[in-house]
Image 1 (cartoon, rainbow, N blue to C red):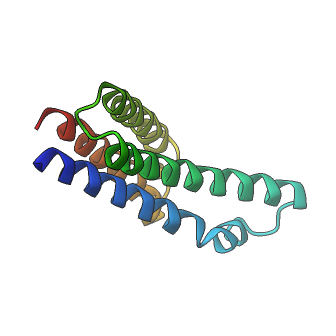
Image 2 (cartoon, helix red, strand yellow):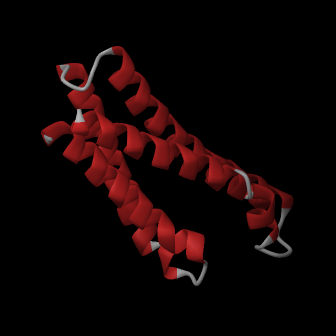
Length: 125
C-alpha cells in the first residue's frame, strides 16, 4: 500500500513538472534574445520534448500501477526503466541547465532525482 502511494506521488510530481515545463515555452525561447527562427524552433522543440518525456513517464507509471498493479514484474520493469531515465535526465541537467542562474533549471535535476527515488522506494516498500 505504501509502495503504491510512493509510486502515485512520484507519478504526479513528474507529470505536473512536465506540464510546468511546457507552459512557459514561449517565455523561455524569448529569454534567449534575438536568435534565428531556426534556433527558436529547435529550442521550442527540445523544451517541449523534455516536458513530454516527463509527462509520459508520470502517466506510464500511473497507468501501469492502476492496470497491472505495483507487484507485477512488468510494472517493476517500468519503474526501474523510468527511474533510470529520470536519473540520466537529472545528471544531464546537473551538468547543463542547472549550472545557469535560472531557478527552475536548478530544480529540474533535484525533482527528477527525487521522483526516481520515489519510484525505486515504491518497488521495495
